[in-house]
Image 1: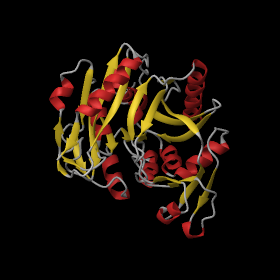
Image 2: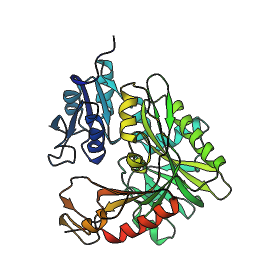
Image 3: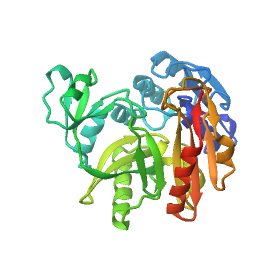
Length: 377
């Protein structure tokens, strides 16, 4: 008989206590499911809403083993975790989703790129370098550090000889700079039964530090491109044999080709709009997938645009949300603050989703909202 998933007799844990964990907990509360968090910051966004909060290092073997030993299911909100501990927990009977072997592939962007190549999944041309001092690459190119990069960090476009003076140190990927026309993303989920559900393709617009500034749902692409993007995303999660939710980021080229940029094995910034815009949010879908419950409908119920609420330039210290009252006075505007007390430039402090019966109107409203609200100190 299947163990009761509801209440305190089932222990579900997350490594990482940021905003993704916080929004996951909000979805789990609707099912009366307890969620236990481990994070090394006592003031992390998830700390106040978790059933229990453990102060610990998610990259430390002993901390992860101690936290995970009493859990039924363990998931992550970031890839940079101790993989060896996850393998050991799996041997001890803890269900780790996404699986340790999947996280090991995705955690290292070099192994991730080799996975695409081995499985005939389209991606840009690439090479590896261990020592940038001896780097010989044709300009322009993209440099990505292989591990540890997050929220736009660890990625840079190298266009000129002057840029060569600011290369990242350490093991890196050198990628061809592809002439894309749009950056797209598809969120797809898969449970233990092998059932899959994918959300509509969305379009992302990035700022100068590689953070998503706007997201538009659905993406303004042809039906044929939409179908290919969704099919590719499902292909990726099936080739990984992964359980959980996966974000697949694409470059759309001028000739209509799709190249996989990166993947993320967790709820993702490109899926936040699903809370208001889809029948099932990405957070509830992740919950359903890792507990092997029936996956929810991904039907789009309204058009949407999302704005990342980032810390303003030159502002450090206690966060003040200037223009918040004017923002929430507007119709169909949904504010999500992440509970971070301290702001700094480009720190993700929250997001705002604007919905409408027309995508163009949602875009116009989103542009207005972006000018209204600022995170200052």
